[in-house]
Amino acid sequence: MDEKRVRRIRGNLRSGLLALGVNLTAQTSTTAIRDLIRKLRPMDCGIDLIRIGGQQDGGYLIPDDLEGIEYCFSPGVSTISDFENDLADRQIKSFLADYSVNSPATSRPEFTFDKKNLGSSDRGHEMTLSTWKDQYLSGYVGDLVLQMDIEGSEYEVILNMPDLLLRQFRIMAIEFHFLDRLFDPFAFTLISSCFQKILEFFHVVHIHPNNADGVFRKGDIEIPRILEFTFINKSRVSCTKPQMVFPHRLDADNGSVRPLPLPKCWYSST
Image (cartoon, rainbow, N blue to C red; front, side, top):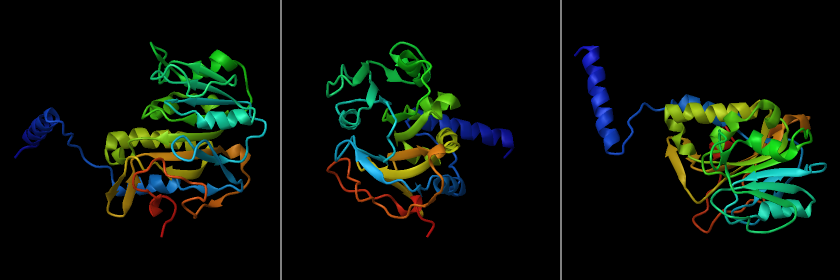
């Protein structure tokens, strides 16, 4: 069978499956996925972790390195404001944004809310992180905190963010979604590019699986569909060593469904 006919048959098969809601593609190599996971293994940077926010969803472990920080940007509000509330108790003001709600769950003078979503453009109810920051802190060069849970839009927001703004964040707590799609080559390119951009300026210091959405397994690779990552700016760190103890004593499940510990492949090579 000639190559042109083979391509035509494959194209027809793919089109037929897509019409049924099935996407047939080659899979990302396990070697590429293992390499990305290895780069993302958390490091002990010599700074204790503290829990900011509630004991379930909305709480994150971050480095105890908040001194001198005045502002946090927190897109993805939903019905929980525990993280921002704890920061306000530490005299850190928060800018919050979410088009799906009309206000934060808690009203405080330290909160400034925009009924918009974060994305890669400034259209309609969407805005970029750069535009948002310039709206309130134009010219501000101090360190910032980023806490982001925006249901999959985190990838376009990070890839769209200028390096100068990215480097201004001292600490970032970001929930990454759809990680089981790493086995799709197109999604792998997008997701890995996002992480590579962050890793140029940040160390991973903690990973916590969101137990609400389960885990995808292929051989010895286990990928929770949602992972909460905590990053610290490399400028704050003088030395590192692998972090081998999981879960952390301050970790808590996001909900009451079955607990989901961090799979060992995310922090150990053995």
